[in-house]
Image (cartoon, rainbow, N blue to C red):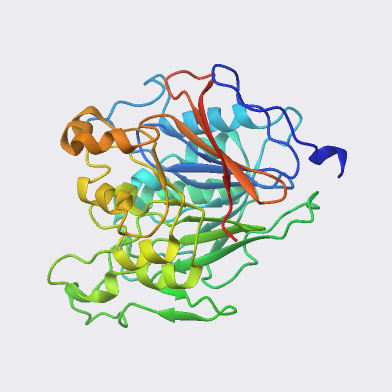
Length: 384
């Protein structure tokens, strides 16, 4: 085995998170208390940022993490700088914006001021008019970031469902383990699981389309599936799984996604664990051993969504559920089910071995900038 792939010392509670090593896959679900953000260090050192949320102040029981001295995007940049190995390039090779809501994209500008971005992928480039123009206040925030990134050399692309060539390893993979990131859905177009074939779930859109037949911004989210050998990971923004009463069934994007990706070791629960994710078909298809809930407000996770995720009848086997931050009012609402959670606050780091066969979940302190290790879970064995 190459020297670079020799097993490193284990992360220890109370100590610092050990630096990423070549061949290892690290997935960081970052806690800021203001939205979604995930930073991935791929096996060859390529970097990927998925979302950079920055919801505004004033939402009750939603204090920022670690503290209010910086904006959410600045904290995301600080975290990335903290976990990047010494000597690694201070840049983000790929940034993916799942959809144009402030708690998913409001902090990109601050991140981009700290780290140049190579390629930005979103659901709308270049027109941002599907299924209808993005509201001006949101578009103003997002366009300011996009224009700045382009002026600094970034390439911008629209997400192409079914394709596995938009986010690739930029360097030589030190491990022989196969690696792939595939866009599995965007704008209602979902990968079928066969080759690059897709199906469109939404009805045709046009000036005469009734409001009831227009998908929401959440419905249009970009979703991706990552594979590293036997290990599988899924994240999908605010994708809908359970349609509102009286609305069309096509709002359900989880069912075709689950059918396409199948068994998935680690998944990020859609829509922060709000009221619409984790339908029965999606749970049965993915059968995830580890579930990450990127909650940040008192409405996340919804008690029913958490009940579905933990239900032993949803699929056989154990599952460990980790929450970025469980607000006190939410915990009271959920009740005794809180005791079934493996973690209720902290940055959540999934560390996958170079062979893709095993992984661990490391919880980091989100109340202090040095982000010391709080707990280590695993090792888990990847599903075949």
